[in-house]
Length: 141
Image 1 (tube, rainbow, N blue to C red):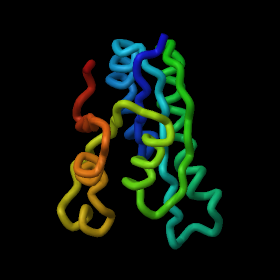
Image 2 (cartoon, rainbow, N blue to C red):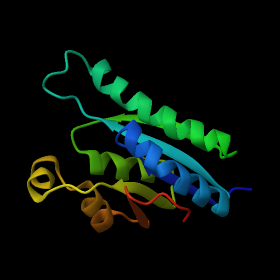
Image 3 (cartoon, rainbow, N blue to C red):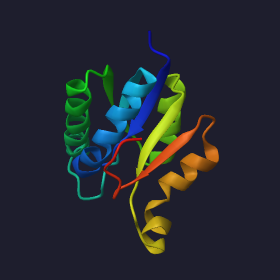
Image 4 (cartoon, rainbow, N blue to C red):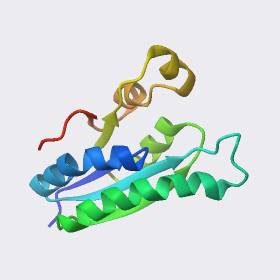
């Protein structure tokens, strides 16, 4: 019987690779199902929405393979929107998730101002706990 449902937000294959070990460990300990979500943001240089989706497919595949290898039940969700944090919160609510897990990349204040500070928004606005994992973390939770 599954006790928890985790939403894991991934932004890139690199981030998914960094999250793989701690997410598999956490999901296993909690006997949780995992929803892996990527928010595809269409960039001005994209000719079609499919280009934005293709960038996220790699991230979903990397983490999906790690979870499958660890015997963790998961589903991948591709979301589209301009507001990444709100899309993540919406997906967590729709999926009845009890925890949001996200990577926390080190970015400068100007990049956070331009792109938005997704981790801070998640922590401040989420109705469920948020676990932020730094990119230098490669251990178990």
